[in-house]
Length: 172
Image (cartoon, rainbow, N blue to C red; front, side):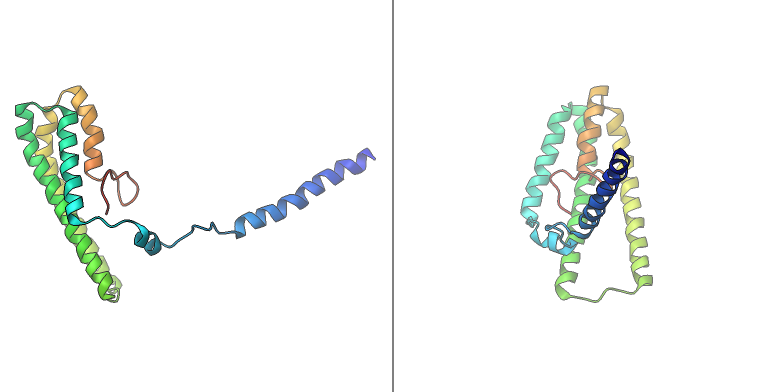
């Protein structure tokens, strides 16, 4: 009897586990949506709303860093670079939206690669320009301000790469 129980219990467990595994793998979550469907449901902010959010971000950055007069002068070119980046993102967003509305066919792979290369080169140039104005500003900060700047400025710059970072109060 004990011998039979020793073999029957594992067999019953295996028999119950296999359907459970198959069932778990075959069921799709009910809220599984494609990326375009999720984007269509996301609230779209107007350019005016984005501008208000941007102004709020800059006010928050200046307030949390508690900048003195000398630091505010060094902050101005940093803010100008951040504003230029935001304007470029808005322009690209509008171009993508216009292309989607026209239902234009996707360009061939070589053209897409050329476009991607151009975007990367432009982004690298903007990043270099930002670094040039940011370094003197960052050097003027004390240790506590640097710690805070690491948080609030990472969020202002978009913190990460395409969905891998937290983009505070910003929509792509």
